[in-house]
Image (tube, rainbow, N blue to C red; front, side):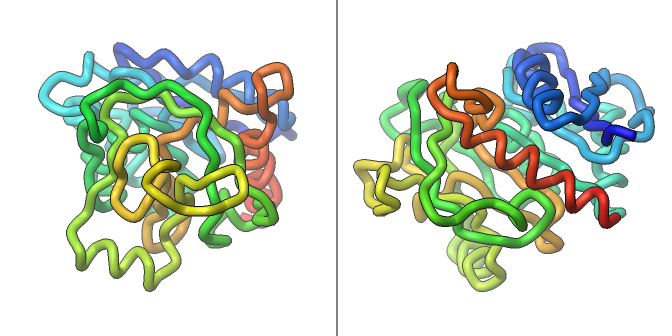
Length: 232
């Protein structure tokens, strides 16, 4: 039986079909979950995709975090269920308190849509456990509020606990401000919760799922989750 990935849909979400396609490429079933519902429909993993939920009024993700569906997402995460937040989904996870810190306006206040390289920094959790760490992943970004920020104590905790999932880097894996597209503190592109089952990232792995798109590196995140689900 194929694993089922629930993909949240809020008013303004636009990446749910891309995520569903990526999920199908690894042989899993995609199930769209409306934000006003409370039924997770027996899904094995959850994805909060990119977009502009509720128009990103107030702050990105600030309204979406109060959706009935998010109450179920929080319960699912507390039970150890794998949750992936991509771009707007990462913002929602931070607003909901499932991940620490915040996503601020990009440095320079420009919307950035471009290819980036990510250095895998952690092997924790179901999304990263089987991920290749030999070379940076080529995965695009598309956001205006992607500058990750957290206070020094939170950053120290993330580093100490191995919860920095990805950093922006060069094609060769080198760090530096010239490789950081939005000014994120410590070049952070993605983080994990303490248990490792919740991953938030600003780049879009679903947009890097086959060579025609310029990279298939993003597919590794979806395929790495399957053996972890089989062990649950």
